[in-house]
Image (tube, rainbow, N blue to C red; front, side):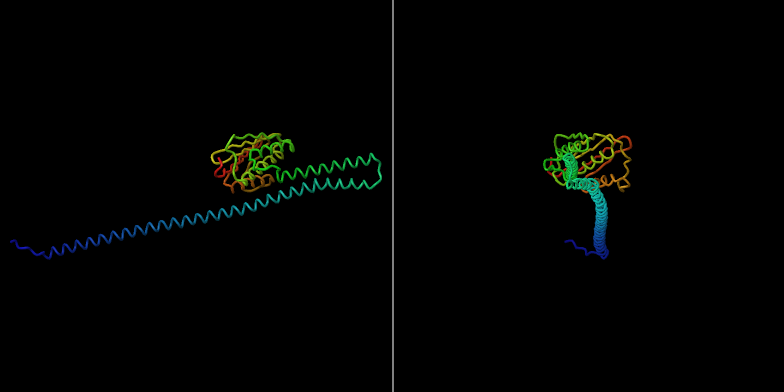
Length: 285
């Protein structure tokens, strides 16, 4: 029977060193893994801090834009009030005063022919005042429901502009996919086109304009174009000296708030082209 040899001191020492090395390697790997986890957590924390900083900056920018928009729209509103006050004071009020003055003559004795003349002129003055107030009422609130669709409303606007301002409007539209579901969006686009057509009557020195409506992806696009005198289209960041720029600036800001766009292409002597784009509401095809 063979005699079993006892392990030597060197063997024991060797096994102990191997065990210690293994424990050291495992501990070192744990430290490396922990350091990697800490580094990853640090990167995630830095990313989160950066994301929150970007969100805060975006919110601050949006708040500043909304504040600026509110101030600019207040300017536009004030200008419109002044315009309406001017119409009432310089036109309607003057007509009514003149009619009152002529009616006061009825208290005097006069021949039938003179009486007929006073009545005729007074009636003419009152008729003109009524026409002005009706026109003003239509400008403030068109007597057409946008529930019937944006295209029919713009076609009606074209007819009205021709009747009241002598401006021929050619409205062309794609056959389908044009309507935006949001009534506020339809109203905003209608008012924007009306503002642009009023500008044509005031400044372009032409008797015709085009309104083109089409669907572009998930947006509705409206182009208002004329071949008039044009203007130097400078950036609308500042309204500048032209009163017209207030209206154009208002259109741009309102479209920006809707997630749309407003583009101007104009120069002296070659007409103007205004492009409005607004998102189509979900569910509208």
